[in-house]
Image (cartoon, rainbow, N blue to C red):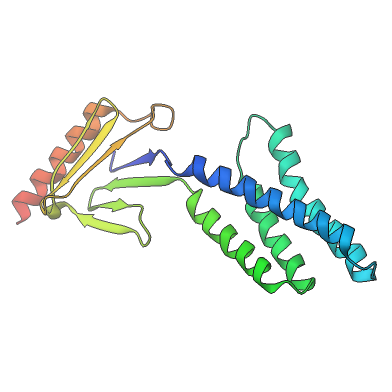
Length: 187
C-alpha cells in the first residue's frame, strides 16, 4: 500500500454539541418571544414562524434518527435562521449564527492524518505537510500513532479501533521504515 489514512478522534465534538444545542434553544426562545411581543405585520407573521420551524427541524431530525447522532443539520439551520434574522432587521444575531455555523462545519469534519509515500499530511488549518526527511520515526503500536519529528516535536494520537480497523499495524510500520530508509539513502 502506498498511503495510509488515520481518522483521529474529535475531542471537541462533545463540547461543540452542547454549545450547538444551547444556541439552538436560545434561537427557539427568541423566535417565541418575538412572536408574542411583535406586531402582527405580514412580514412578522411569515418570518417568525419560519425561523422557529427552521430551528425546530434539526431537533426533530436528531431525536428521531437515533442511529445518526450527527449535528450537521444544525449548521444548515443556523445559516437559514441567520438569513431570517437579517430579514427581521437583526443583523448581529444573523451574522453570529452564520459565523458559528461556518466554524461548526470546520469543527465537525473528520480529522485525518495521511501518511503518503512522499510526505505526511497533518489536518490543521491550513494543512501541514511534513517530508520524510523531517521525520525521525513513525510507529503504530496498540492503537497509538506516534510521529517523532527531527525538530524534537512529538505527536501522539490514540486511535479508535472502529475508525481504523482496516490498518495492518505491521504493514504500516514496515511502510514507514522503508520510506525512512529510502529518504536516508537519497540524502
